[in-house]
Length: 233
Image (cartoon, rainbow, N blue to C red; front, side):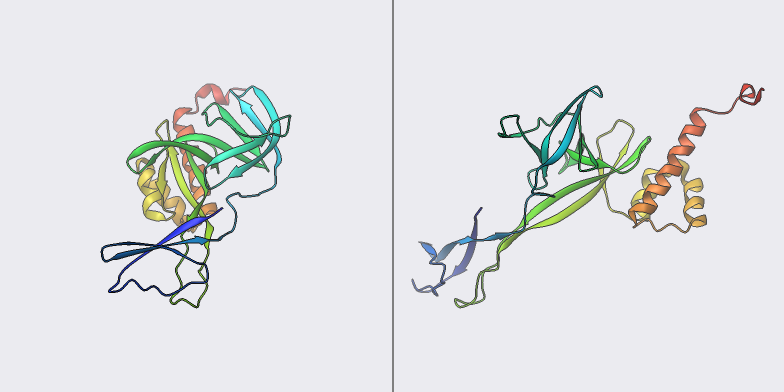
């Protein structure tokens, strides 16, 4: 795969320092544009190899195929029975188990709009922390002079965390005390006491999950209070 790197600068003449990649030069007034074919390092996939995965449809029907997750395009690719590469439909009624991880299709807030994407749930309950295992493509960097090599573009891990509360679309959060306590504010004092007593660091995902499990337990207790009949022998 190739990427075009665009450089702009003012020039007083038609000259241009030569690069060993043989750039194509276009001139428009005092703006000169140079295009290079730049290499790309890294991979779009969490794992380039196809692995056995299972698609669960409507929590009932299961289909097993060789699959892989494209973290750049946010798509799950699979091989048909004829070994033809295809893409799985991105529907909320389809859950994928791939390489021991669950991929759920969820609605989420993205740039003031509602989008749809794959997420890994990290806990269970009313409030769930989700990981969005994406990658981004960083642009190639131009050399400082005509003798240096072009720094290649590369795929970089860009994992982000989202929170689901009830039936609302997922909301992006930054791990930390401020964001987490905001979404659990209806039980703020209990939550703060739990964090303090257990010395939780809410920048750590494991500690966030521990807090959410506690919070979800509080909700379950309030929804299902003990009755006298619960103690009857």
